[in-house]
Length: 198
Image 1 (cartoon, helix red, strand yellow):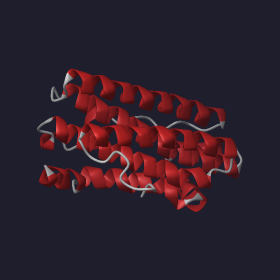
Image 2 (image 1 turned 60 degrees about the vertical axis):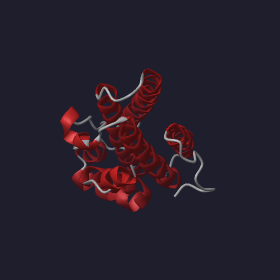
Image 3 (image 1 turned 45 degrees about the horizontal axis):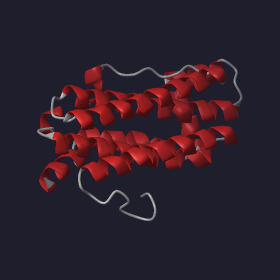
């Protein structure tokens, strides 16, 4: 099982997720640079929104992209036929949480004058589906993504210009952390492995 976990965590798709998540922690400078690579952020600048709103839109769109990725990941788990019914019910519930996050993030981007990013096609995330052989593999994969999402929101909280957005990101951070904890517990692992997220 440890070897399966190592394979999943070392998978290029997983590393890509963490690289994408780390964008949130780069601060406002990185958010501004996203305008050059993120069409939605560039459109927000052209729409004449303020620099602070533009920066917040860039961070929100990065978070929105991560939420879409989480929704797709839980769909992979749900369709894998590897999850027992009670575990499947929890996975679908967590997917619903991510949908709610995505809805709020998308609406907020629009409210700020930006254009929300769109979800990729189902196979566009490059998930290591072939490495998911049993329920534990699916749970470990989901736990890794939830941990990455928690870290991403932790990085996002201090960079928002709008403190209400920081508060909302902190609320989502709490939800992602609870997901991670529940998944660790389902794996029979310590659900609170440290005093700090890291």
